[in-house]
Amino acid sequence: MRSKEKKMTKAYAPRGAAVTTTWKDVPTQTINVGGVKFAYRELGAGSGVPLVFLHHFTAVLDDWDPRVIDGIAAKRRVITFDNRGIGASGGSTPHSVEAMARDAVAFIRALGLEQVDLLGFSLGGGVAQVITLEEPELVRKAILAGTGPAGGGGINKVTKVAVGAYIRGALTLQDPKHYLFFTRTRDGKQAAKEYMSRLKERTKDRDKRISPLAIRAQLKAIRAFGNQQPHDLSVIRQPVFVANGDQDVMVASSHSADMARRLPNSQLRIYPASGHGGVFQYHQEFVAEVLEFLEP
Image (tube, rainbow, N blue to C red; front, side, top):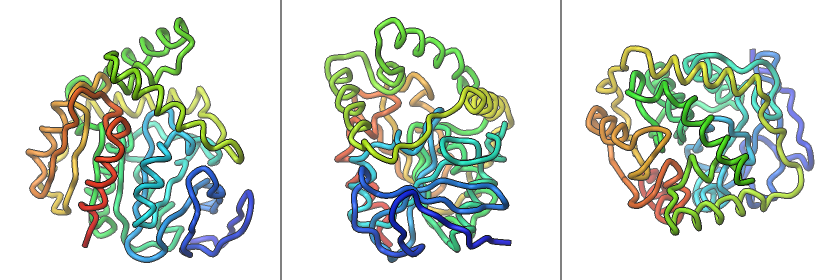
């Protein structure tokens, strides 16, 4: 049964109302989903099918690029949230992508939404695929960025890649995203610097960082997703926009082309000289292409 309990850390706004603010200022709200508090933020146009963002590995609300959020929210209603056990949301982080998808669906329905568009980045792209497969009536269109399919080769090795980036980050006093999301070229390093600076623009009401327990649960879920039998993506009839950089070290860029081939109604965009975070390096192009894709 859907609970009507809801609070905000700052001012109150009716659910579904238009929110004319920016990512750095939008208040964090909470909603009770089956007895568990889920933290979320909502902004943009109040009408039309909302776009729900699904997080990447280790991410909390403040890890979304403000240029992507604000750019899309200029034309669309945008909803971002911490899934179970992540950031300010309660409960324990699931150990499978399928369970994460079920929690995401429960959150969406708790908001009273009957249909949404999905934008899943990295781990969130796997969650978006499962939602679209298991709850097709809920999804109008989907965007899969920097992600791969179930059973995709190398996806189960993300732990080794992540640990290497964390070690390099510790040695250089830099966030691991410098190494995970961007190339080590001059342009890639500059894009990383600009992206990390944007993530710091929000200075108040910031989210809680992800816990070590949640990180371990996510890694287990990613490994299981990479080892399982591939999904039959041909049954997904919704329009899907697939995007990535051409030098992704976390999820091989070839997986994007593979998914686009297997999805019957897909568009593929590979950004040049960029990595896992290509959609952030090319945020202006990505936002414009997403808005065009989401048009009715």
